[in-house]
Image: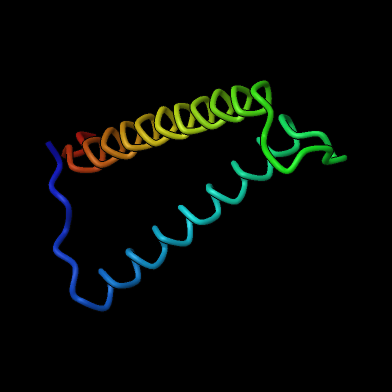
Amino acid sequence: MATLPQLDEEKLKLVQDLEIEMMQDMYNRMTSACHRKCITPKYTDPELGKGESICLDRCIAKYLDVHERIGKKLTQFSMQEAKSQEQPKTS
């Protein structure tokens, strides 16, 4: 298994900030997409209806599932790339 390089405090802070920014972006996109899909533009009730709640629950579950799958696939690709770079090139 590939080991992660040791990061100094400055780089670690940068990585943490980037991860927070990416999570905020994902949350904002998910909120916007599921709101558009599940809630009508004209509010008639102050509370969510049963159908809206179910739709939101499913939408968020799917969004998070896809996000997780993509993350795993990207990790897999980056590990394969790291392995291929570690192997000595034979000419």
